[in-house]
Figure (spheres, protein in one colour):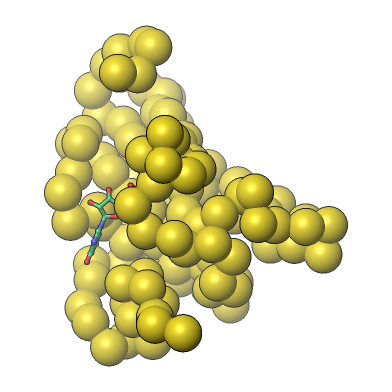
Length: 114
Ligand code: 5GP
C-alpha cells in the first residue's frame, strides 16, 4: 500500500515542522495554514479516518483529542480559544486518508464553516 504524506512525515522521509511528538502521535504545522495557528495532530497508528476506527482504537482516539488540546495550550490558545476539526470523507473535505485533527486558532473563526 502506498504511504500517505503523513506516514512519510512520521517515518522522517519528508520534512515537517514538528510542534509535538510522543509515542502515539505527532503534531506538525500545516503546510497551507488557514489561521495564524494551524497544526495537524496525527496518530502514528495509520487509521484512515474516524469512520474506519473501531473500539480497539479508543485509547488512540482519546490520546489524540487530549494531545490536540495540549498542543493548543502549548501554542498559546488556551485563553483565546481554538477550533478542532476532523474532515471525514469527500464532503467533509478530507484530502489525506490518515486520520488527523486540525487545531486552528489565533483569530476569530466564523461559524458555520463554508
Ligand atoms: P484534510 O483536508 O485531509 O483534512 O487535511 C489535510 C491537510 O494536510 C491540509 O490542511 C493540507 O494543507 C495539509 N498538508 C498536505 N500536505 C502536507 C505536507 O506535505 N506537509 C504538511 N505539513 N501539511 C500538509
